[in-house]
View: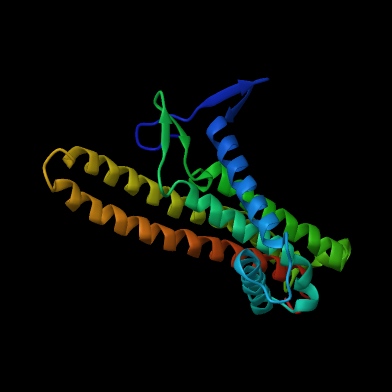
Length: 242
C-alpha cells in the first residue's frame, strides 16, 4: 500500500508478505493502550483523580453505549471488549496525526487504521465474535433459525448482509483515517514548499493546524462509531428480541 509516493516496508517469509510498518504500529498502539490501563488502575482510590478518573469515564461511556443497544443482562459481558476497542482504535487513529516517519522512501510511522488490512481484520473479528456469542447464548439450532426468519428465502440475503456489514465496518474506518493522513501529507508538503517565502509558511500552517484539529475530532468519532456498531451487531445476535 502507498501513502502518496511512499512504499510500505514489506518482508517476505515462507512465501507470505508482512507489512513491517503495520506490525510496528499495531505493537505501538497496543503498548500505549496497555500502559494507559496499567497507569489508570495502579493506585485505585474511592475518589478517583487523574488517570483513574479518565478510565472510569471511559468505562461509563462504553456502558452507556451498550445500554443504548441491548439489555445490560446480555451486554454486560461485552463491557471490557468495548473499552478495549474504543481505546485501541482511538490511539491507533491518533498515531499518524502529529507526524509520519519515512526512511529510504518507505513509510514506517503512520496510523495503523489507515490501512484496509488492519481495519478489515478488526471488522472480521467483530463479526466473528457476534456469531460466536450468538451460538453460545442461543444454542446452535436456535441461532441457525435466525437466518431463515421471517421467511426461508431470507437466508441468502442475510448471508450477503454479513459480508456487507464486515466491509462497511472496516472500510468506513479506513476511508476516514486514510483520507485525513493524505490531506495532512499534502498540507505538510505545501508548508515545506512555501517555508522559504517569508511569512508564507504561516499561511500554509493555519490550514494544517485546523485540519489536524478536525482529524482529532474525526478520529474520536470513528472510534465511537466502530464501538457503537460493534455493540449493535452483537445485540442483533445475542438479544432475544431481535
